[in-house]
Length: 329
Image (cartoon, rainbow, N blue to C red; front, side, top):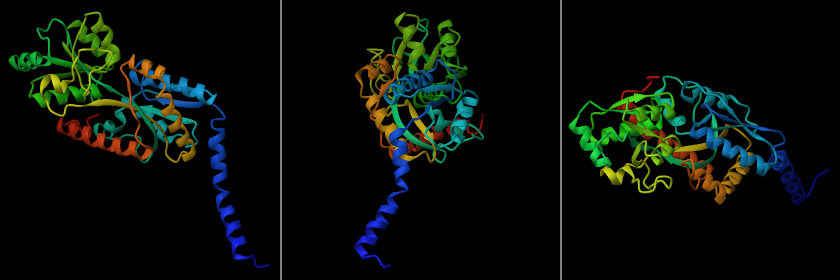
């Protein structure tokens, strides 16, 4: 039997649409079971705190549990590698920071590709690094600190949470931008770095806000500047490094991104992206994020996140090479 052309085209269009129906249905019923959120660092750090905030809110919005699993090791590479190998079904997510684009240059080998192995979901928050000093240093501003270090070349050190961390790289950028003879001392966490600065062993530190803000408020440390272009609400009156030092274009922030394994169904990714946008439009969440030094940001499009990550990899990868750290870990 020969079908009329119009009827044939109508049936063909309907048949072509059928494969999309299961994907749409999966997105509408997603999730049907708990979702694992990998954090590739130990509990208690900024990435972990952010991930738990996100997991709680996603659980409330979806009515299914999103739970955090900490898989630390090798500067985050172990957890990121496991995220890359997870099934792309929407039931494993990865919350990670700037390290995902630094480590491919810093380490000789990493068990993931930031772009081929992951699909971006959202880039939700940024966070500056805080330049703080032990009050025993006779400095009240960044300009004072720069003059003091130049008057005592090679004598002073700065602490960071570890080689290749944002704190380390921001500290090195500060040193290079201002021509300082300043030695880096890496620690295994921001808490340990701040502990050393409190004790006066490494009188200068570059870390994320959570471990340093309480010490500043108690008068045990002095915050001189933040690495973002705007002041941090948690530290009113503490200026940006660019403004305080005169170093042009010194805007550097850490960021946290939610990723899914590559080839996760796009409707699932789109739905998560939309829900995350709603979560970080909630004033309560904005306030909770601000209390730990995280600044909610308008996420780029899903495609725009990849472009942003690549620009950040170029920026930090170039610095890692300048420092002679390429493949050093």
